[in-house]
Length: 126
View 1 (cartoon, rainbow, N blue to C red):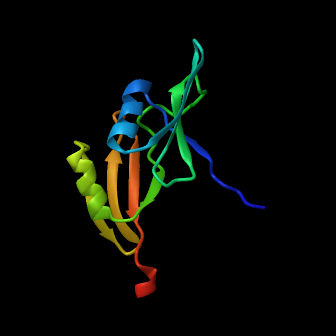
View 2 (view 1 turned 90 degrees about the horizontal axis):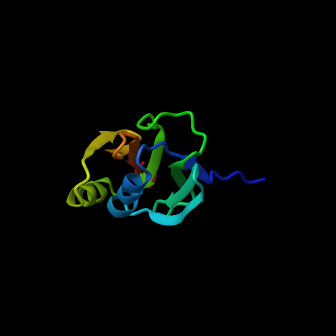
C-alpha cells in the first residue's frame, strides 16, 4: 500500500502576500483559493513538478506560528541555476552550500518560514 504526502501546511500572517511570493517569485502553481466562510480561507499551492502541495490560509487550525516552519526540504535539479533564478526575481536566497549529501540553497518566505532546496549528489559517479 502506497503512502504519499499530499499537503503540508505553512503558517503565514498575510495570505495574499504569501500567495504572491510563492506564485510570482518561486513559481508555484495556484491550485485553489477558496473563501469557505468569513473565518476560513483555503489556498493550495504546488511547487513545479511536485506531487505534494502546500496550504496557506485563514482559520486552518494550525498551532505553528508564522515564520516557524523550517522543516521543508525540496529537491531541485541544479542549485546554481535555481539560486541565480531566485536572485534575478529579487528573492534573497542563501547558497550554494556544498555538503557530501548534496548542494543546498536556502530561502525564506515573507514571514520567515525557511525552505531548504537540495540538489542531490550524482550517485552514479560514486
